[in-house]
Image (cartoon, rainbow, N blue to C red; front, side, top):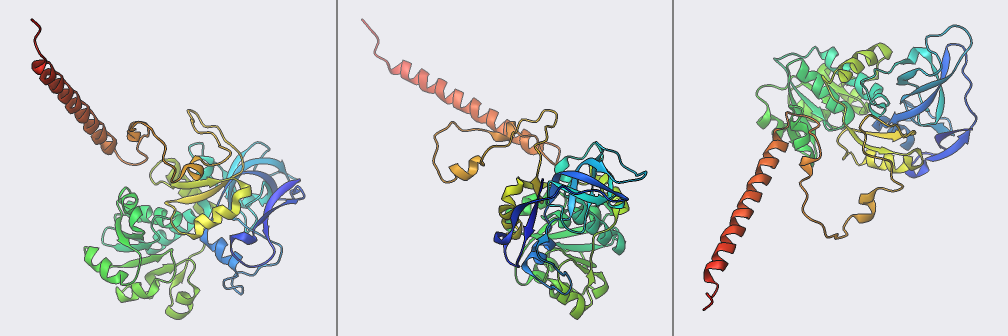
Length: 381
């Protein structure tokens, strides 16, 4: 038997459950993929809540999940593009949150060796929407673009694509993510009312495009003088119908291939915020719905060993049981053990130099204290 995430009524993450389902059989032009990783997307939360059921119709029991990466374990009749054992990535309309799923071959591509499973399994929706937005706007060095939810998967990728074209990017996020955005060359701006005022203070010139991956911010784009044809949104149907904003949709496997090539070449990066096991899918969606994660949240269905990997899956996360509990330990300089994900290593080098200087000053102080003590000691007869 296979296992899949289902929900039988609209609601929050609590309506999700993992159930046994028959092992899928591939039809003509299909393969069965054992899913190793599958990303979460905000639109899936909107569908599960019952937002705009006329736009996103649901038949119960309904499935969740769009993006996936895994290994082909069965192929359909006839000659196909893939063979058993092929490592693939791609998408389905719904149902990727499962251990096994039948996928049309036209919606899959071979996974580049340079992509981790977690990135490959999260790339289609965020990557192709971000690609379509930037390519469609034909941004260049004369543009200043605002990207909302810029620390999320789609926003982070769109900002990087825009930067590759030379555009200036102002990205919105929570204050705690400002340094995260700066690593990508994004000018950070805080969420909240009067966004247009803050953007004007930050922008070097007129704002020429507005990519709303958060939803509900099109009025700020209008206040900035952005034409409706250059206001793009993912979730905001009211903006599409009332303000003529442009609705973004995921692209095909050709677009996925272009995005995957850029990510595999490290020209752009898709950060992974957290990885949850399938049984914790409700917790994964709670984390997604909080909109606090820097990058993608992923369901990891298989433990995959990478070269030089040091982390293994724990039964529970250590921080979950030690949060707020005082534990005595010597001070640790963690930057020494963790290489920089992005940048030239200058932050780690500065911390090392500061640490060495502190150690030198401490040793000098101890020598002076020892010399002073010895000078004041009584001299014997």
